[in-house]
Amino acid sequence: MNPNDLSYVIDTFFSLFAMTLIIFMVPGFAMLEAGLVRTKNVTAVLTINAMIYIVASMAFFLIGYSLAFGAWENNSMSIWAAFLFQMAFVGKTVNIMSGGVSERVRIIPLAVFAVIMGGIIYPLIVNVSWGADFLSGSFLDLHMYDLAGSTVIHSTGGWALLAAIIVIGSRKGRYKNGKIHVVPASNIPLVVLGVFLLWIGWFGFNGGSVGSISSKESADAVALTILNTNTAGLAGGLIVGILMYMRYKLFDITMVLNGALGGLVAVTAGPDLYSIYEPIIVGLVGGALVVYAVPFFDKLKLDDPVGALSVHLVNGIWGTLAVGIFASNGDDITFMGQLKGVVVIAVFAFSASFIVLKIINKFLPFRADDDEQTQGMDVTECGVEAYPEFKRAI
Image (cartoon, rainbow, N blue to C red):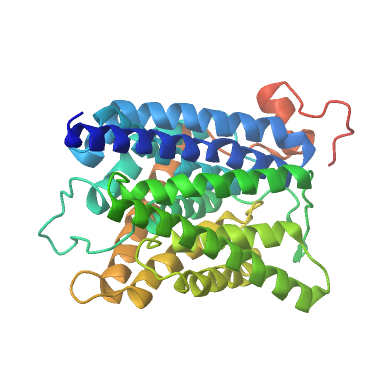
């Protein structure tokens, strides 16, 4: 076999394998969210996660990929493998948003937003960061390094979630008489399963973004990227466990796992650029940010049942800026370049999402009314209860 053909085959297989790992994040998000919401809303959460994968992926296939990259072409691997790898990313932006508006959001308007996010908003952000770059040469031309999407994916989803919470509002009874009503997770084993499916998916998410594994150098780069990804997740979970025990003398598994996710989000911008020790710092800061961001957003009455703002928005920003701190190398990567990318994408992602959400909301209201929320979204939206033998909580 021609050496070039062998490289082509190996990199095609690598992309398909990485894409498969990323798709494990679909059930990962679904299980995590299903475990964190009340039993009366589990079927609705699972349906939303399935619909997001279906409609956002189809929108990206029909419109988004060409908008993001300009053409279906790739010389290093099969164009179909290159597309599938990029398609695996697209639903994550909406997954981040959907979890944060759980227990009060209707399925149809959210599916409409997923189409627009997958077909237009997310591809435009990809265009100016990873793709064809129609802003090249302008003042807004980004010089931001973001290997696998701390900002492009995670912060984008976080900004969309912030816009959605503002438009939709909080769950019935969540904030009452100046107090925060705590809603406990309904199924801790599902939360644990979901997080570890996400963690496994992250190896494809970040490792696959290196783009090639068919040479010694690229194989080392992939291995280093996955090592650093795992290290940051470990550090994020570790620091949250320590902080929670110092404060409460208890271990909150949901917070520990969200800390691990925070570390994974934070390292996603530059795991290929760090030494084997820098991800410890990135992950430690990421996990600590989750601990302090969760109560901060609650004080602002931004109701986020799964902590997605704290995990994805806050750590997407931190992780992108961390590249400018720990991996800056002159003209190519600078802190100011990273900051500029964060700000430009923040303004576009939030404003575009807010406008689209407001327009959809006029015709198809996102928020279920109080009676529907009391009865549970499983009954009102799906007609199938996940736990029909259980007495539904109010």
